[in-house]
Image 1 (spheres, rainbow, N blue to C red):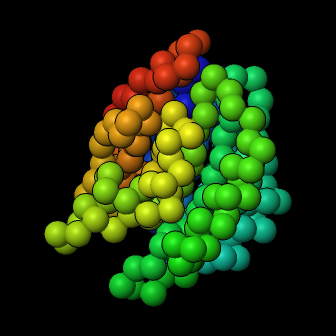
Image 2 (image 1 turned 30 degrees about the vertical axis):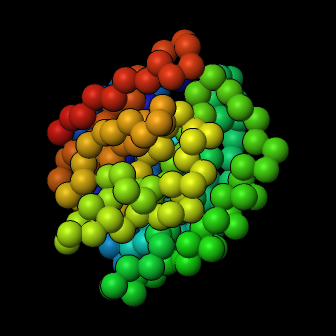
Length: 213
């Protein structure tokens, strides 16, 4: 698994999926907001079109009813869990910390912290350690309306990961390095934005390419 397609913020707009798949990645990460406040009926058919290893978390705009849909699909649901295979350890957390909009999948930062503690406890460290989180860490790619709105808990724990794949803030597409951890927001998949993540053989050998289809 060298080249991974990172998608986020589909918001129920699935017309670009064939174009995304034509990028020929080895696997796909989905960092939440698959729907736009639901419905979840189209999620299973969408994921069924992906004949590649796929790892996903929900976003704050996804109803919590999406969790059993993800778990029953061929996609690996990473919300509140982790998986280690080959040179990778992947962990995931969906939803977001509170927003002003009362969206379906919000948690307190304490709840986020409790989930992260459970994930990290006994976590095996690999060549590449990746967190797929819908919400960005605080003070990273989380600036909107004059404020940083990311999660303080994710910021606290992010140092054990080499890469944090996040979304949530459409205006914050980009990449930044925070004390050796890369944070990436691929942009809004609903409008064709995505990122290809190229993993090398060595620790920290991670290159990110932003694309629009």
